[in-house]
Length: 190
Image (cartoon, rainbow, N blue to C red; front, side, top):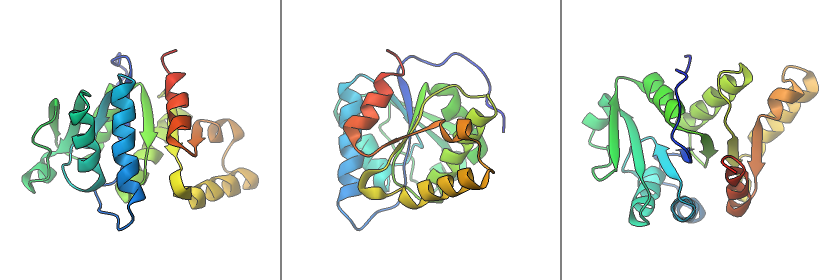
């Protein structure tokens, strides 16, 4: 997939996170706290458009805080009745590839929170676009509670083996806390 190069709205962050329902309390709190912090910092948000799980909690908190929230969801998922009904804007697309392309087109930064295969797919998509020089935006992993530790170890292993270049490894910023992630975002439009 190649992202269409078009101007992006200033201060628009794509937030990748899961639609699952974690048993632990901290991912829920992280999703809500992130939404509130982005609204307070006057960021527009683009996310996957669902009203379930962490995605739903994130969108509800962002909307309640006055944030502009754009959802991008494939028609098949909307038909399963998981599209959020109260977003600032809901974009319907044909498939997951179009979803990612639209989110890339609309974002000036990317913030990755805990999630499953879909979240990892989105992370790897934007990291690959950045590696190929087709995306020039910050990509920030919010590694709260060490969620991404295993993945970060794998990246280090790939770097040591020489299959991941240092300059590509450096395309990802890792934040251990929400304030640290916000600091990385603040540098985006400084």
